Image 1: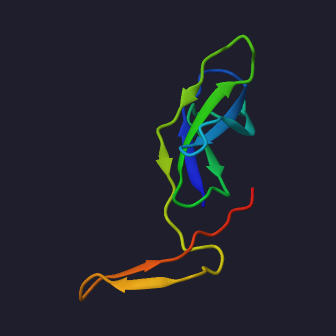
Image 2: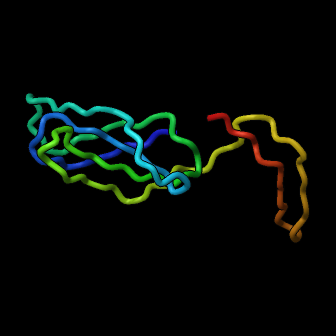
Length: 112
């Protein structure tokens, strides 16, 4: 999954982009952001790749200087759902009515 993150940073040259999920509320650094001096626009955009499907993410952008202690937080962003990445086990189904079918399967183990 990929998402574009847009932000309007204050005038600093180097930032740290951090991420957290709703399930794991600890901030983790994902990349260092260096602003281009040649750009005329204050708006910046970063393409974030390898996000998990159907997850709530929040991002923060903070200056990498110790003298500045503020951070810009994003709203919570949910990535779209996706088909399972592996073969599912113990597939079960049940007809809810004439037009709806409920499919269930055992959770896929995730490797961290």
